[in-house]
Amino acid sequence: MMKRSTVAAVAVLAAAVSLPAAAQFQKPEDAVKYRQSGMFVMADHFGRIGAMVNGRAPYDAAAAVKNAETVAVLATLPFAGFVEGTASTEKGKSSAAVWSKRADFDAGAKKMQDEVAKLVAAAKTNNLDTLKAAFGEVGKACKGCHDNFRNQ
Ligand code: ASC
Image (cartoon, rainbow, N blue to C red; front, top):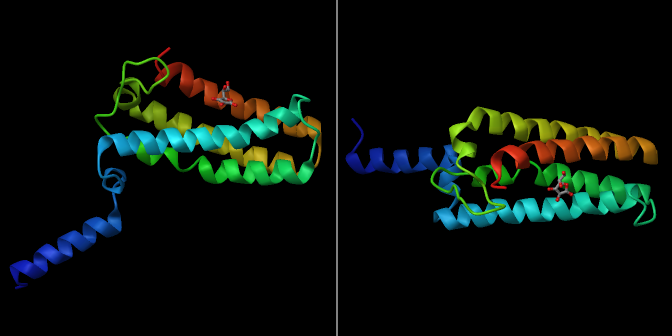
């Protein structure tokens, strides 16, 4: 038999190793801040590609790849911040639908990540039209969730 203190220590260690998303944050507001910050930085880098495909900035193939790769990393991050009990009714914020339709929300996140992976590949083709098409698909994936899971 393990001593009670040992059992407790093992339990703490197991919890730390498995690290459920919620355990990453001290308080619910931190989870909200985390996901909003991630989305903000992701939108910034995505927007730099947008400026190129929309003719507001000169096409720089290397910068497009770098920004697409940055978006790909960022695209994995915000979802840990969607912890239970952090829905809002405020315009522009996450609605209760995120949690009541969680499978749909997760599928939307996956769709976005898949389209972002294609964006990276498109950026590497060094073809602005290819990049433009992939940019549009990512934008659609963003919008899909924003329409359904963000208060209008
Ligand atoms: C962006 C951005 C979004 C999406 C969305 C696409 O650049 O910040 O939230 O694209 O507007 O419809």
